[in-house]
Image (tube, rainbow, N blue to C red; front, side, top):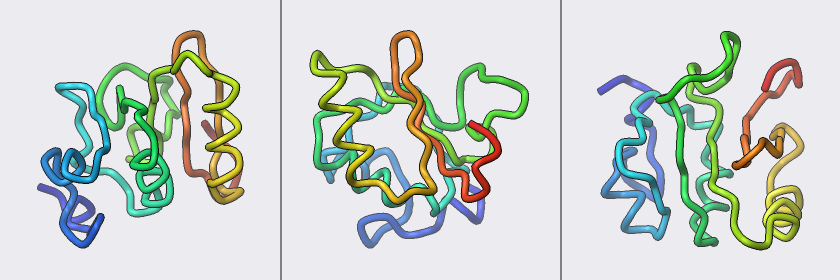
Length: 116
């Protein structure tokens, strides 16, 4: 386990079990061992929804993707995609980018606004 994964979330360290205990839905096999504490506002927002995290530090992403830095999350679309987008746009700080991909949202923390 990396040093970053020991950052508290909901008062405990990052773990699949801890996320599930707080109603954060995660697709089986998603890796988040090196997730950044900067994503905490996003994880807390996801906990208020029925949204499913489909990728964090796992999967194939672009060469400069923030996924590899533990700074991006992919979320499965719900039926009400526009409402889902509006929710995250409303509750997340301005340092978050919300990108509507073909079949999911890519949400990343980028305080410099340079990458997705």
